[in-house]
Image (cartoon, rainbow, N blue to C red):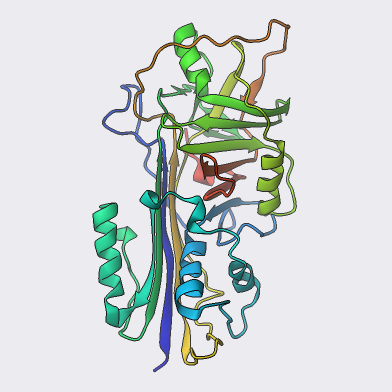
Length: 355
């Protein structure tokens, strides 16, 4: 019987501003919708893919698992029998665990005979205590290899954004949203405005903002920009336009749709491909799957802080309306890092929360 390399990049949990015990009273927990890859939503193991008329999801976990096989088992590129396009791009190792905090991920590889499944599951319990759906689900025989990666990020706002009562019309679909719309109290508005930096503004249909977490550890970007050729070029373009952060003006408004999804995907183009590397004859890729769960809403832990007074320009300016009601790009990085660990291109309302 042929031996199997079981490639599990399945488990990427990215939880943005989730409701929790310390959340403000007006906060709300949003359940991630259980979805499947479809013509409306696609999942990608690399960023260098053509833009599609769909939601496009990327998380670094699949690359991390692939890297474990390359670096610690095959000691080089993974050569498959017929599939060349995706595997070649993964072999470039454009992203590594060097841009991530060790506390937020695990990346492991080993053989069944060395109890790799137990080692992974034990480490998951020790480090994250997540539910069983995030543990190993593949069958791994004594001579099989398992590469496994898991990432968990929690971004918490110091102060909950306003839950927009009327929601948002996203391309004709009414969805739940949050932001800064009707807040009149100058102190509350000041706190909310401090959590938003306007990095680029051309007009109300072309701009980039960054949402700041209370610990200044994670950075979440939202960009309304013209479409580029690839998802990677979308991110590169957005990053090139990021300028010195500006505070929102007293009349500016912000409205962001709630995002919530849980998607598991098998990369069928890799599965059952024979491995052609010397010394690994008889091996093939068994399972090649990835799971991404992501929630973004207005809620989070409450930050007790002093009031800040922003000094804005005294020149008269038209109020800006930062309304994410059309296709937009979301990407997340650790503070000080350039490589995003999550990229989401929102093109339709399937991954948003209906109002």
